Length: 377
Image (cartoon, rainbow, N blue to C red):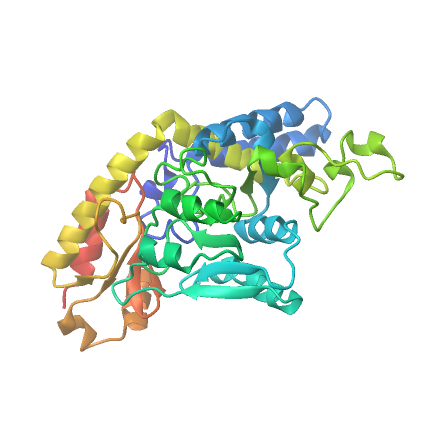
């Protein structure tokens, strides 16, 4: 068994798909193993799972700059967080939701479904260079905009939005800002208070380095009391099982969005990964990731690749999307290049006809050199 903090570094893989599903750090895998061991020996008896979940709310609040753990709910993925929070807003005929055309499908399907209720969608389009200018979003906000639902970082370009001006614009007309942070949380600083975000959802299996089936949902405290989740259970109630069946008295915290038993194994894994990242320091994570992606971009360009991802200081992220060198493209398709890389243990992804590389802060330069060498014709 490896003693490396990041076992993937001992695996023979050069891993560039943290924007997809990340390998688990050793302490995160150990947390899941410890849960399984405890559950196998004694079930919940003698465990500290409940206390651990309370701690997880606190460290999750710290991670995203929430003011209080009461603003944190646990969800199995981003799609659930986006859907249940939007469903609780009770949007009606004539209300408008502002989205972009570049969103991951899970951040659009529920909004598309709302059109059956007469809710109208306003769509802001990504430019050819992968950018979605903040001014385009702001100018699309109108007096009927009830919600702006966007990704902090776009999965298909790596473009990072400037959220605070968007929040200011939608709040000025009485609307809300809901953010899909799965491609930013764990990679770069996210602060819901500073950016005045109302709702944020982030699955744990990408940059947060957690297991699949884990995630967090943030709801600004002032909003909670007015929201009735579309899915309810005993755990949604103030008092849990003690609330009985007769009255609808919802939890005064974001936990009202947790209807039933928590997926404890995955959440304990995500708790360990959030603690892991906080111990490193999110500012340190981002500084190192910027260094890694800068080295990657320069190496790709030196090899004749064309980098598509926006690259200004305010718009870059951990995602680097690029076209292979022309000489290589003349010999094989992007899908064929991806498959050849995969077969040689270099793990990337294909998005919209381009290769996507998403290293993390611990990715060594030697892995980048290996990737670039494999792209030379």
